[in-house]
Length: 83
Image (cartoon, rainbow, N blue to C red; front, top):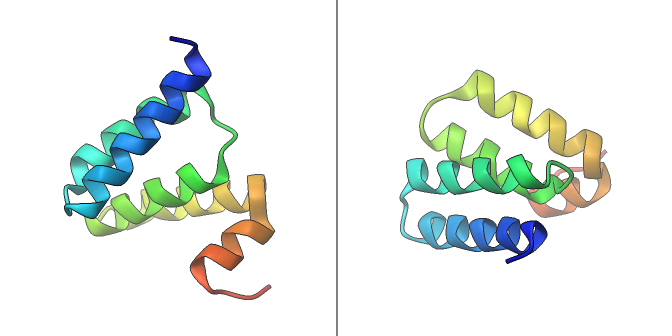
C-alpha cells in the first residue's frame, strides 16, 4: 500500500475511534497518519481535539496552531470560529 494511502487509512481509523470516544486510540492513529503526511491541517485539528479530551491542553494548543499554519481558513470553518 502506498504511504499516502496508508496515512489516509490511519486517519479513517482515527475517526472511528473518535466516534466511539476512544481518544487515546484516535490520537495514536492520527500520529501515525501525520508521521507520513504532516501537511493535513484537518488531522492536526483532530489531534488537538483528542489531546483536549485527554486533558493534554498544552499539546492540543500546539496541534491547533499547526493546523492554522497549514490550513487556517478551513480550520476556522470546521471549528466555527472567525478570523
